[in-house]
Length: 375
Picture (tube, rainbow, N blue to C red):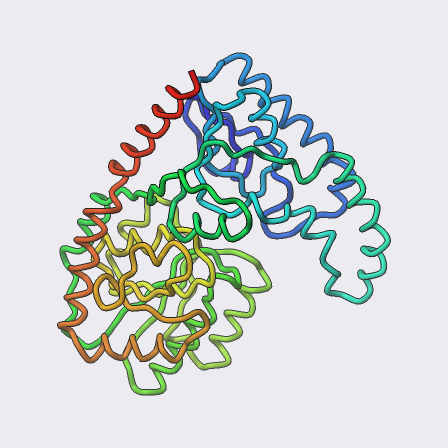
């Protein structure tokens, strides 16, 4: 196997043999650069395609398995289908095929600052013309694919990309690493240590978690909330301001992003995970929290609907519904038996259904099936 992936984060950790960290992303993950669009982007995209052709020519793979394309040029998938007709398999964990690219999104939207609107409107015509000339959006055949959740498969169909024969293979977690975290968990002291872990972007709904905690504190509940992660600087600044204005600085703390290796120990220190996302194709952190015996309070928007079953494996609320989330937190404070039930039931379900070995077995069987049919 060879893995061709992005250069992002290359300075933070080493990578094993066979993993080529060489691809350029379409844009910075937090801030789009219009200057780069006209200068280095064309060269970077051509280099991406050259690397792909070179690797396919040297390695001659039986299949090209496209696992993630977020913020990567769609031309890579289009070229893969040209290089290996009928031998490209997509693992859809996101909705990139029917969404505009970062380039299209930036140039189609008006600038937020009035002073920049005129400049962008002048450049928009040129930029969109360049994209059309380059063939954007590149048409894809999508002959072979599997989905991470039933919800995502339904969303593809709703956007005009029905794939009735594509299997759903839920994401997997290293369940054994997290299962050990449940050993010392106790729900007897009528206090709760709450956790949010993930990106600090608006669609994750972290502001809703802060509102809910504020309501619980005002009602006399004894909780703390730790927010772990990083994201859009302006949104993180708003969250910190929200906490300060509500007088919650002693209650709510911010912790920098943790590595994957640190997550089992982190989850072991908390009682419940708050997951107020607006849009989630799977929800890995929620699955890991369940496996660790944490109580998961989550929206059921997207992939979380596949494993968050109200009153059985977690408690559910609607996006932006801080009031219902606060009521759920208060229920947990008042009812240790409910805490133990949700903790144990959620963990059993996650260990039985979301183990990574199960996911890998299903993926391998599907890849062998596609490889045989393409012969």
